[in-house]
Length: 549
Image 1 (cartoon, rainbow, N blue to C red):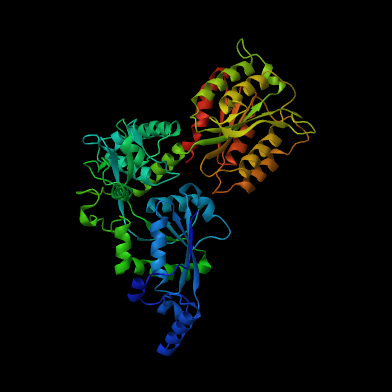
Image 2: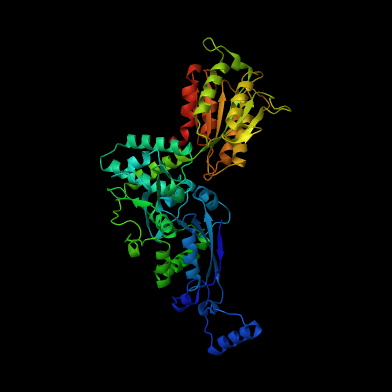
């Protein structure tokens, strides 16, 4: 991640000064003092010194921590440079991937300011973390979402664009571009040309395509592709690419109904003790943007103003219409589901291998039915899924431990000892369900699995625990249900959502206990009362991540 601190501005920036901001006290400096300093510097070694008059007048500087979404960090850093030259602030700008924003804002030492790609993301994170940030601040500029390619579709709609197999777009864990496209599609629902159900179905299909293929919107690759490929990107990225590659055949367009802007919003995310500091620092950044140098920086970064007026010199896409924003609550709800659907799955599958799994279930054992369903389900997971596998029964791990890690969490496509994780899981599931013995050690296992995923949590994934059992806890020496639920509630963290998905197999499963365990983590429980329903129940359990968003 990039970092910027106290970078000196150019001489031209020094000439157009704004009023000082922050806690520093500005003091007058005589001509003779300035001349003496310059002479000393020159005599000492002939060094060229840019004497920043305003910075020299600061009795003290105030440190301001800024995080910026990775797509806008360079622009924010340049504005911070400009703001420093006209104020008594030292800005530290840190690039944070959208998938890691929750974690960063939940750390003990939080930033004072966050510049996000859109205000919708700020609202989404604010809701997830349960924060009460009083306001979303001004826009530092806008950039419309465009379709870029060397062979563009005729009269595309947002719904059609999102359904194109040849579309390349980053998931919301990496960029807000796809979120903006979803808002565009949602506006088609509002206009009556699309039903809400059809929209969700379309988004689900797109999410599956994104999770099962490399859909990076690399404009260089799109421009040189022998196949007709389209990238969903910002006008800003398109203009920068064309400027660097003037002979490229790449073109850009937007749907006739209009497009959605990324509006690069600044937000005060400071703790209460720093809110005055954050407010003054935001004012300094806005003053810098409104200066002549700030406007030049914005133009050089190919970013439009907050009014979305076209870029100078006929750059970018002409005749852009900005879609009216749909209902905010509806939009935020759809975006939460979209984010959940597009996040790759990362989970431990925890399988009951107690002796009761040998019981008959209509001519076949419970274990045999579960094996068939598990192998079928394994084929359905996208290749970017990361899965681990545990087995459990009383003392299965030895020394009083009821669980055993069979395979650690790895991406299904990752190879170890010459075979992929998916192939290793096939073998592990078959082997463990062929070795059934002992009682059910549910409670200690559930707590250990949750702790394992919590300790290795990856914010780029949808983290969870899937537990499958046909019985109830039979380990008399284990933690009690009440204490287990208490421990899970204590560890629950809005920045680390880890639902336990509990699947009960047959009427013998302890439905009440499974429900309490799952709900303590924001998860859900499912009971396959007929073992033949296990396959359908497993697919329903895996899809819970979107329903719970």
